[in-house]
Image (cartoon, rainbow, N blue to C red; front, side, top):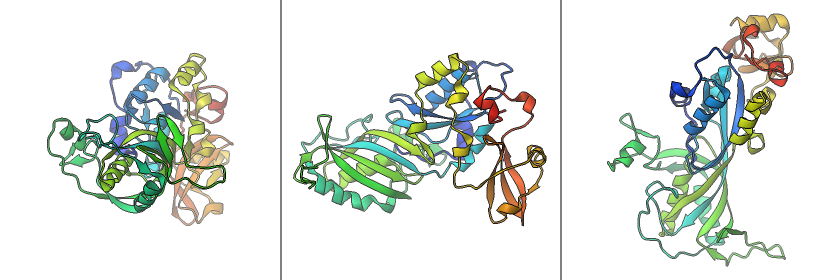
Length: 359
C-alpha cells in the first residue's frame, strides 16, 4: 500500500497500454481532462483504467499513482493530452487513513496475504502505539514489501515472490510527514479513548488501530504496519487502507465508477473533470492573450515579463483553458515544455468542457 506514483515511462507502459479490443477503434476526438475516481476495493488500478477507457471510448487514459487492490479512495486519472501532466505528479505527497491489525504478519504485509505464522492473542494500548508511531515519523529507512513493484535485476519483486523465489531488496529512505494513531478498533467500533472530561484513557486495549498518515512518494504503509508488528514482537499487517488525497486532488473531487457510467450515458463526463485552475497549485499561472496563446499552441517561445522569476508557469487562455506548461529559458523568455491543446477544430465536449478548451 502507499506505492509510489509511477515515473513517466512506467505511467506510459502501465497507464496507456492495454487490450486494444477493449477500446473502440474509431475516430473519436480526444477527451482531455483529469478525472478522480473513488476506487473500490478488489480492483487493480489498471482495472479502473481499462474500465474508464471503455466508458469514455478513449485509448489515452492513465493513472497518476497506483493503489493496491485492497485499497480504496483517490485514484486520479488523466485522459487525452492531459496525460502529458503525469511527469508533474511523480513526487506527489499522499494522505491515507487505514487500520493496522496486530497479532500476525502476512507475506504481502496486508490482509490479502498468507499469514506468516499463527495468530497471537494480542492487546496493545493507545499509549504504547502512539509512542511507537513516533519512531516512524520523518525520514526513515524502510524495507519495501516483497510483493511490490520494486525491481530486482529488472524483474518486479512481486513476480519473484509469487513464484516463491528469493526476494532480496535493499532499504530505501522514505519520508513520513505525519503518522497519527487515531484510536483502537474493536469489532468494527472505533475507540479513541476520549472521556467526558476530555482526558485520554490510555488503559484501553485492542488488536487493531486506526491511523492517519501523510507521506512522500515512495512510502509503503504496508511496510510501516509490518515493521510496527516486528518492533512489538507480535507481528502486524495492514488490514485496510483508503487514500484521501494525492497532491491537490482530494476525496471531495472523486467520483464512483457508477457515477462516471451514468454521466457517460448523458454525454456529461466532462462535468466530472477537475477544473484546470485547481491543478498544480505550486506553479504560478498567467492568462495569455490571443497572440501569445497562438504562439504557445504552435510550440513557440513567448515573453512573460510579469513572471521573470518563475521557473515554470501554467498558461491559460480564458479562465479555464489550460493550454501549456512553459519553462523559463532566459530572462523573461519562456518556451513550452508541454502543450495541452492544439487545433480547436478537433476539440471535443460541450459546455464546461469546451470552455476549458479540451482537445
